[in-house]
Image (cartoon, rainbow, N blue to C red):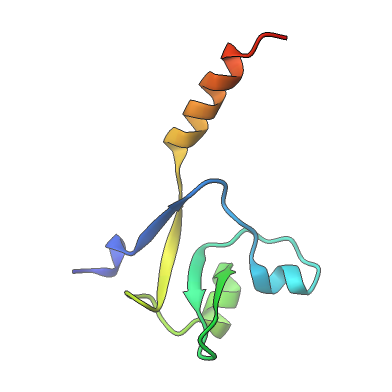
Length: 81
């Protein structure tokens, strides 16, 4: 099985935990484990520096759930103001 199947569907895309620690707002690309064992949401740059690889039990690529966005927009249209 290839790494292309290693995706986690999320809504919304979270910010990178490492960048956030330094006061930088960057969207995460991965839910990744570091060699210290902790999991973090990481942007591409932080993943390349701190991630331990893409694979089951290592890291997963984040994928935006677009059908959730469509569902939320439809629900907003139903709200009467």
